Length: 137
Length: 386
Picture 1 (cartoon, helix red, strand yellow):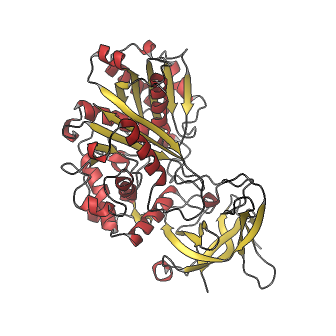
Picture 2 (cartoon, rainbow over the protein chains, first blue to last red):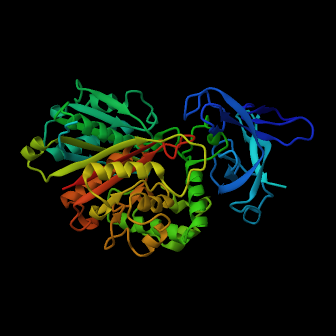
Picture 3 (cartoon, rainbow over the protein chains, first blue to last red):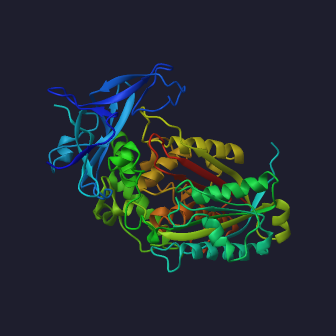
């Protein structure tokens, strides 16, 4: 098995068994705003009291296909921002769709779900695992 | 607070190079030499110096002291300033503040960048890998492509409209011997160039570049004494990004809107008074967003504005008369200073074939920095008048 490393395990969770991966947002007990990812203090009110909230599905706000990505990331790279309307949080991450069918499969406004998978390869070949998005099924 | 009026007495810059024949230090020295000669002062008269260079990419700590030392500039307050693409404009802003506040009578801001010789050579600039979006592989081109994608989705605009920005700026650059690229291009060529990040093609993205620029500012008395054509800094405004991770409208440039309001207020001017703008057109979509943010057309009308010739010679305001970042190339830390050099030449009536007719008021504008949660990390604007 290829060597893997999980990027920031406090950003997302991969439940054991049947449960789907989800993002971990932080709801501020002081002012009620929700943030992603974890922050030491709420940028609005400086409270450090947070309640964890799970983010499962959101709506695609915008996306792009990058043909010239950074080192360690394979091209073409599909990247997008997903809005979680109830929590008031937007998250940017890689998107997975069937190869060669970006335009058919991605539409702004469509429902997206959180998945986990490799996002880049470190020097030495170690895979970095993190959260990603795919069209909701 | 009582502020003194500040005037530009000397400007100088190198050509913007795809690959400079000299080192970063030398680019800085050449620009300073030109600016001092232009001002007609002794270099020893400069009482404070600020140098903008992005992120130590030129491979030196205390880069300003390295540039200045061997040409005999030292013994005065000197500081290196950095906020990505805003660095050079912030250097001029600091010089402006020293004169405005009465701390000194003559000050200099310099911007230098040598990207072709830096560790980022041959790569697209990207957010820091410690940012959540950086580790996921987003590049600056990708971030602007997503703004463009959303803009095309929400408003009456097509990739061909984005191409008009690249075509216009290249046409302007044909008259600018300081530009990296001067050969005219067509909408078809722009659309058929390889896609960097959908919908942005290679010709809708600014090329990395090398260059140096310097601006010397002084009191009105000093400027009058020197007898050169008077160019006043009517506004010098700097602001920083505000962290949010809720539903920011990516078809709008919130940081530039804030900075514009402050600048217009400071200068006592509005969009109808402005003859030209050098903006941060790092990517073609940027110009649409800045036409709107600076009040030259309404939100969502950027494409219609360029289709009707609004941001061109003969239109409402000339955007990017030197060819912008798209054609000149973008030596990141240098660009903000180079824009002020261009605006000064335009206001003096010295811009030759690319002269904006009867240019009375010019805006220069650079943002800077992809930092997680911020629209941009920095925004620096100057309004120059004659």
